[in-house]
Length: 229
Ligand SMILES: CC[C@H](C(=O)O)C(=O)SCCNC(=O)CCNC(=O)[C@H](O)C(C)(C)COP(=O)(O)OP(=O)(O)OC[C@H]1O[C@@H](n2cnc3c(N)ncnc32)[C@H](O)[C@@H]1OP(=O)(O)O
Image (tube, rainbow, N blue to C red; front, side, top):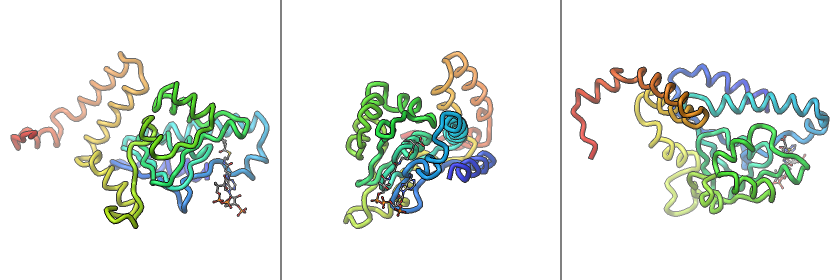
């Protein structure tokens, strides 16, 4: 799974027209973390460090993709699976889903970069509670602390507008509407603001601004005399 994920990220890095990505599980579980059988075979510090390095590299590249990504959490996201959710820009949770950093129960801490990313998403106080208590985060708690950005309802629910995936596509649609270069520029500006010291982020923003100023979408908008009512 780790190697497959790295290969998909490499493919996505070459997706020049990409604007959005929805990451979801294959069955009723988003991701239950590392394969425990594989983990047992590499349960020594040297191999653990190699896995950490590999997964930090993969997940950092996933988060830095020039598109807007959403983790659609159905069922459980446990351990490494919880860390994986933090490598997306947004998290949408199905009504019965749970995100749980079970690391403490495994005598571990996150090693795929999920600890550092969690602090940035929910703040250090909440991160300490989630990791220290290995708390089960349901949609209500997720929304309350900012780990979840929205909830998708079950298809059977009368008012539900479609499958979880359809709801996630609709939700994401708001943020990826428009030309790819503009959406990609939005992501780059936010990413640099999130990751870089202010002076460097400002330089990056200017560079990105230069790629869209006077560009096709900008000129078209100027020509159309649009009003933002
Ligand atoms: C802590 C961080 C660490 C890291 O790498 O950094 C990890 O991520 S370690 C992995 C942490 N995850 C777990 O410990 C998951 C343990 N499994 C469960 O809690 C349950 O299996 C659950 C909740 C995912 C599903 O429970 P349910 O009752 O619905 O089904 P089963 O338990 O019967 O599971 C079906 C089948 O899947 C196997 N399974 C589930 N998760 C893993 C896993 N992470 N690795 C390997 N195999 C997994 C489970 O053993 C069952 O197999 P079966 O042959 O049918 O008995």
